[in-house]
Length: 596
Image (cartoon, one colour):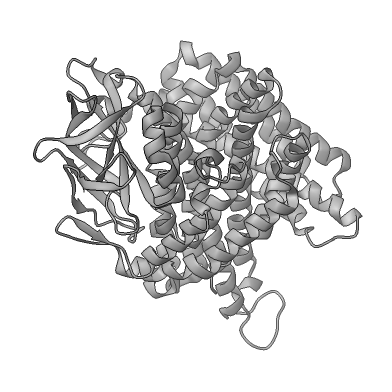
């Protein structure tokens, strides 16, 4: 079955879970109204379904090709990217003064999911450009903004993020790329970066690299990193492109998945050094880069949702067509496998997890909007703290869900899922990187327990848990019989989350090893509990529609019940695992000793 962008599900989440209409009513979205949001998301879905999605499978088979420093994209990519950019999609949430649409982050979250569902490899290029635009807008000089921002927002030029080096992965203390001051206010860069997504390609006129490097005499560690803008082609004062800069792509990686996305080795300064301009203050580059990284982390979370959704759609179609055995409905011949209870369980697990993760990403997006536009300063601060709290959950929980959903999708296909020609294996291969890049998920667990739980002296996380409890109370008070034990299970998950949160806050100073040991289970517990609340809110909204005569969304009630009764019940077990502390890990040398 061809992929179809899930426009209806996305709009329902924007409405019922994130309450975008409420933001519009408060006047926090400019002139935007719900009809316009619906039209924008629908058109994005149409373009993705008709134009981008057909590139996905051929792009995986052909892959990006490298020869003599140049990267050629698979057939069709450059043409579709050009038409996509000309339609303005690269600037959905970018500032209007530089040619963007200026729409809410939440609308961009919806569009980001749509592009990645159609082709994750294609969507990675604008994902990095968007982050580069954000960093440049926040920290770039007026001269850099005037020269670079408009062509990047238009999509004529694309952007990259250059952090990783052969010896410096997640630990940026080890970055060695060096910068030297030039006499004209510019700099010269020398060094090598690896894993640079779309570091070289043939889809845009220019590529603008944002590169972390060290100046002479800079402090050791991350405190000595400065961010630099380094274009592939130098830009003349009139905005035209000049000579080629002293940088090159030395090769592309051969990867498990996302074959059409070129992952480049970039070399700076073979001769006199790559000409560069500073973005932000000297030795404060990580602060600027974190603007880009945080935007990318939410976007990568939506990748998990998107690839999980695509795997679900394909598995559902296959389960309706594939006949094997006799289902519970009986009949004379073999039944479609969707009639078997275990296949139903797998499909519902995929759908429930994907929609729970979508809800979390939408909540993160609306928090970013409120942090920018809420009327009162206190509201903006609280929303910014909430966005900070939810970002590691959106990234890590959603990408874990993407991995699990694509794996289940292969299982639904059975042996044919292990055969490349069905395409189910591609989803599994493509999704695997999302839990690794933009910070491995374990690092996001650490970020959550060490940096985000203490925000506002713990008030931010307590408010989030209180909000989840209100949803459980709403289900208990006005939810129909179709919710089953949803309210009870969600309340139990909230209890588990609250107790684990208390432990984490206590351990922050008294027992940091136990906090680190429980960080990943804690993030999973948070995601399950918050995801259950998102589905319950959607179910309540569906019941409200049914009361008005529209019963078409009542399946959301059953989905919330399934998640609560079959998946969120893991919450108390996770809490017990967290409470066991770090002691079970401290004998790792004995447990992990060689057995040869």
